[in-house]
Image 1 (tube, helix red, strand yellow):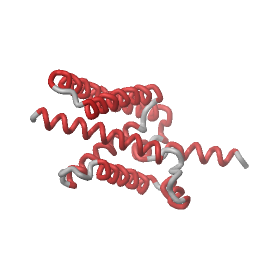
Image 2 (cartoon, one colour):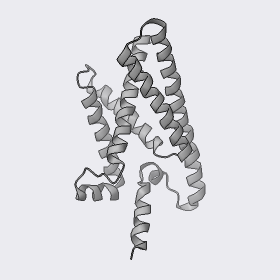
Image 3 (cartoon, helix red, strand yellow):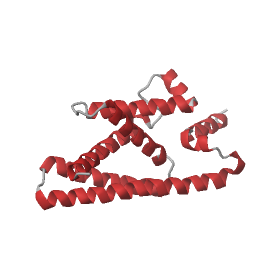
Image 4 (cartoon, one colour):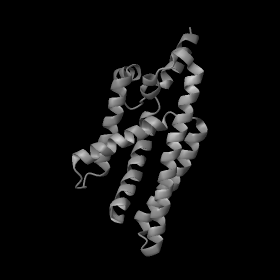
Length: 184
């Protein structure tokens, strides 16, 4: 693989992470910008909600990268990888999540510096190396954090634990139902 190929992919990955975090901000709080009936439907149906999230990621990638000559298959693959990343990212403890956000912010500033100031030579190479290291650290932390949270949830829930609910379920749903029941 050429270094240009790797550099383009790391830049695309960081752009994709930006889309993912933006999606979390926009759709993370009660899906505020969607019609109420659609919000209720998505909150109560795990699979349609996950399909909707994937479509938002795919469309966002197309929106950001619409002048790219990439094939749609490549964009679907990128959206799939970001979707899987988002699944794992949302299954974390607070400490891992905060650490991952710090890594992401560091990546963002390196990406911003690279695209705004356009360094050359050794400085550019050093920035790319730092981006590779931080990306690897981010991915490893997401996997480790998800594994730790999976084991914790499995232990806490015992026989009630479901792998499908763990991956695709809506953790907020349980809290909303409990709070509604207490308000009677």
